[in-house]
Length: 109
Length: 112
Image (cartoon, rainbow over all chains, first blue to last red; front, side, top):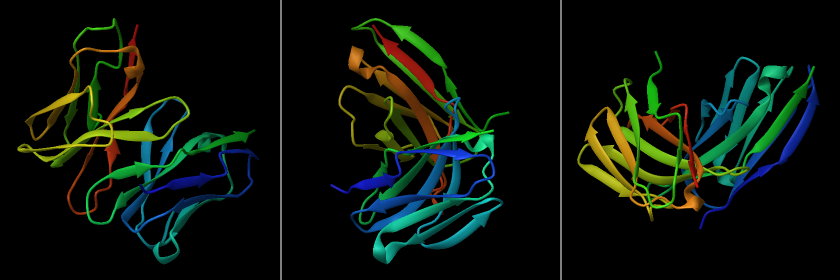
């Protein structure tokens, strides 16, 4: 089946630093989403981004579907950015949402 | 008010008991989903429903059943709970145009 791999698995940043999270997927997908799970467990949709680039404040995401990867950029990180970032893909030709294992981010004050 | 609500938020039960987790949404979305999350892992899809008459198995449906009582309500049942069903369970909704998924707060289930 499709593989969704996220890197790095863990990341520690000093407040104010920038970071790039990566999501690789092994097959063609219909769409791709990025989620943030905060330390209290709440999942928030960040981007729906099957291709191209989107920006929302300090966050931006780029998906290159032909090369099967997506990147999530966090600029000027804040302690509230801490949590786990998941990418999730929907397979082409049938519905099945597959989540990656996540990148655990901790931003130090 | 939250758009996607789940009840209960926490539940402790014993092996063999029947458990129902409920999900309600006010977003007007046709599509609803149930996922489970195990510690340190991503979410895995249990069941999904694209409308009231459409129910589909996901990646890990064994040991679970669902009921779509109305557009706004989607319930997950564990007919005979077992300890390895201890997990965090999430309900989600999406509309059919973008499939952007919106999650409920989760239900933490412990099976002893």
